[in-house]
Length: 89
Image (cartoon, rainbow, N blue to C red; front, side, top):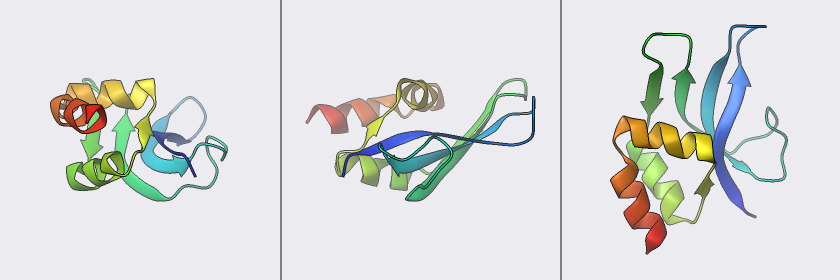
């Protein structure tokens, strides 16, 4: 089972709110997921990102691949160095 770290859309129409989740890559965007790792609210200024770094690191150690958007959110949060070191090894 290939695991992806990706966004799951929540909220109402034109008011998006996202959860950052670990999910099987075959499941739909808003479908089944394994674990919630954080949240992303693009409507605030600046955009609010909350992550659980311990669980994020655990999933990356197990081989989960973040999507491009999640990777950029991790970078903005300042956890990219840890992510790059873990995935490069």
